[in-house]
Image 1 (cartoon, rainbow, N blue to C red):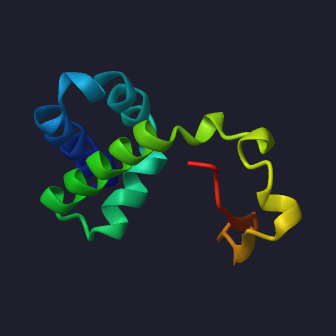
Image 2: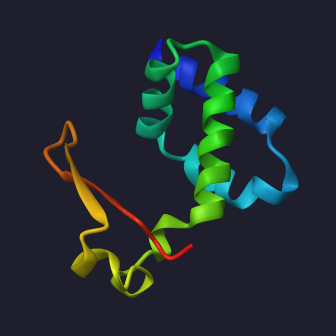
Length: 101
């Protein structure tokens, strides 16, 4: 059932995606665990799942989190413009930093 739902979600996303997002969409579509988290978060409602997925793609494209480095927040750490938000389910520290954007 899970893999069938992931496959349905992939098909629905491919129909909704656009050329501007194709590279990023294809990169994320290969991550079945990520797609399952979306399915669970949206109670397997395909329309809501596609919306969430595309929203995540737009956010990732805008903020490019893999390119955020300490030099992009030069005053955040010493000024205290950051907050510890707790821990993820996996035990990783979750924090929020005010970037220079």
